[in-house]
Image 1: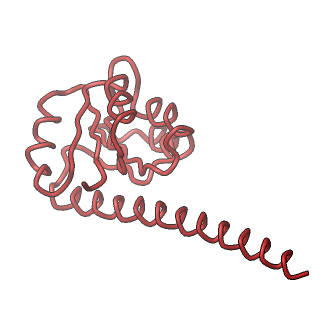
Image 2 (image 1 turned 120 degrees about the horizontal axis):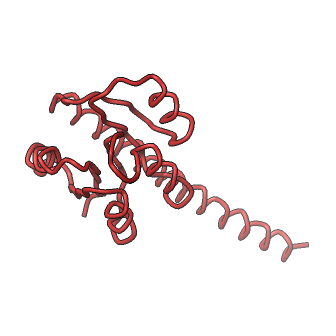
Length: 149
């Protein structure tokens, strides 16, 4: 199963449009709140999170910031209908956002951004696995070296 893409937005029409546009291309999960998004993250491998900035209880930046330490490798995209420079700065500094995109999205552009984000996520995951294997190999070589002394 491919890695998931989570879209969090309090507007149900946006969630439905996103799912309809991209369900054939990606493994899509949707949530209408940050709390619902966290529940999805807890039980699924999500490589990309796309979130709206302006939501009632928790903003997109607050949501991304709150999950950063738990899911540090997940690629984060902020999608908003408002071009607020302070939100952009906060998104980059606090939420470590990969991309900041403006609504309404263009399907082709968003699809490319999500594909790129998934590729980065998979490369990070591969890199961690290779580093882990390298550490194991180094420990085995060290043990072998001690055996021959």
